[in-house]
Image (cartoon, rainbow, N blue to C red; front, side):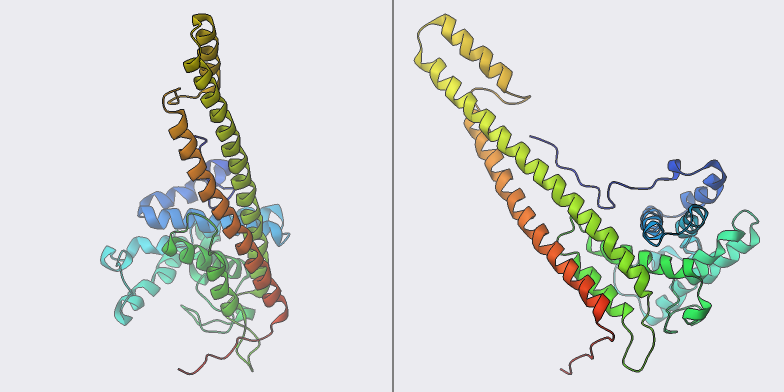
Length: 316
């Protein structure tokens, strides 16, 4: 059966080996982090790079901002594992400890001449444009653009990782949260996150969903071909079983060998057809959901473009 793989962070996945030698030292810092945090940092850097491209940033700024994103959670090196890896909702006291990773990471960067220029990623990635963030409660005018970009990438990946998506199906639920964070309350000028950056995230996600749809469609076509191929095998087997001529038996047997793949035989061909048909139905259903999902995502993008304020919460 054809292998069905999907890289959630898409075809433009960034890895440290793609980056130039001058950045190796900074990225080695990630090796000291726990596996989950290191993976999160890589994901945030990947998204940040793609956001910068859609924002038409210069190549130098993209490299700089991507490196800031790689290092944004460096301060978590100093957060106790009992807090960092706590399985449930953090208590108020635990959250106070967790919040210190921004200043701890900043201090680490400022002490190291090789990391100093990337300190913005550590200190600004939890600041909110409306002043609701931390550690300083800054507003938009005081938050550098790299901090605003990384904040969007960080929040997106945090939700995606928590929900453990294997596909972009239902990803619109994550984007709804971000749209809500981007819209200001009535009487306020800004929401928590940069609306322009979020628009770029929509482009990134739409690209990825369309790429996933393309992959699933290719897989569906492959499964259809496999079913057709195995139906030929069934036909050859019937002819082989019904003939008494050894020459014809050998002819049909050779045809079966040419048509079958590893693990497939004349004896299990009908079972193989059932397996391929089951897989085909699953993929058709997934494709249907992905098409529905991209419609939801595009509607949400429309909402972001034309809705000016956050809707008030309904009283229960």
